[in-house]
Image: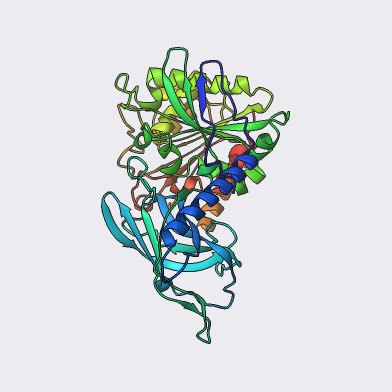
Amino acid sequence: MRRITRRTALAVTAGAVAAPAVSTATAAAADTTTATSEGRSERRSEGLQAASGLNPVLRTDLVTRVTPRNNWLVTAVALQYSHRIDLRGVVIPPSAFQVKATVGGQTAARTVTRVYTNTTAEVDDRAHPGRPGNRLIIELDPNDSNARAAGTDPLPLDRAYSVRQVADVRTAKGEPVLKSGPFASRNDDVITPVVDDFTAGSFTDSAGFELDFRLYQPEGFVRNPQTRKRYPLVVTLHGGGEVADNNMTQLTSNRIAVTFAKPERQRRDPAFVLSPQIPLPRPMDGPDGTDWTDAKVQAALTELIDTFVSEHSRNVDTARLYLVGLSSGGRGIYSLLAKQPEVFAAALPTAGWGDPATMDRITHIPMWADHSVDDPVVPYREGRFGKPGTWTLMNALETAGAQVTRGEWANDLPKTQFEARSRALLRQARATRSHVLFTSYTAGTTPVNPHLSWAQTYENDVVVDWLFEQSR
């Protein structure tokens, strides 16, 4: 995991997008060293007890996760000890640790689900974790009512969690290997894998309109900014719920951005990922000019993309610019493609809507659209603001001459079955030389809310692989 906890902010004006000059590895190492020494001093000063000695916990971090359906959650606490811990063969009862969260002025317990050692402050998803190290990972129930790390905006989690060991951890023979104590440790920091690898920036266009953004830069570029290697650029367009001034929730409300930046994807398809955020107050220029189709927003977005590509002309593969958007971001895709039909190599619009009259301009662009049949927010056929939904747009594309390959299945299928259906649809499309695919999700099968069509989209390796295969 690559982390820059103290990032170089990117203040960008029209015509200039600057990449951070700092080495990621150097910055991360420096931050870790500083934070650890500060944490050690603080933990020891707080842990001094006349009768009990020093608190063995040097540092406490919250570990959060951006999930497909439940947004941004605090999923674990990582304790850093002053010594290496080897608990192989020892069963650590979750009841040995007590975790409390103070969120929104309310203090309540979190449910501990399992505890194990590790060498880093990371959750280990293996069935039987427990790598000896100086970290103790305390996993928490993601279904707790107080598990969220954000509402409309990120929640203030600085020192919001306290952790106490309330019982000894013993071997099968009853020998204590990790003793309880009177100490309660509060979290020093919040770690969000993948999200922490994005740099924060701000862009001001030639008209003076400002768009905040987050930028992920591929590892090879970070290590060697002078490289001439070219990478694709993925531009993500968030939905209406992420219109805000926090420059964060476009990454954490769903997996539209982190999907393309996660390590396993970057190993296969290293790419730049650019994730702008529309500011408040929510813009609306006319009956359909909302969010990404607002004239000011769309002009700034277009200029941001053009400026970034120009400033990184040596490293951006202009034949592989991709648009990914959900809900009003899907609407933004249809609008932007129609206005710039020769710029983007492919697109993934989810739960979007648009103007059928413009579909004849984009029949040549590879696209994989998806939408829940029973979507109540952006109706599958009728859409919003007088502009129809995906089903109607796909019909318009066919009328204009595109061949659309369609499939329908449940949105709650297990990942293997979901991807198998996607793979079959892709085979069908390739057999007929179709480059437009449309997946409909059967009514009653999209968990949580039928509008959340995208929950499986960004977990679907078949779809993401297909996207990266496209080139102008």
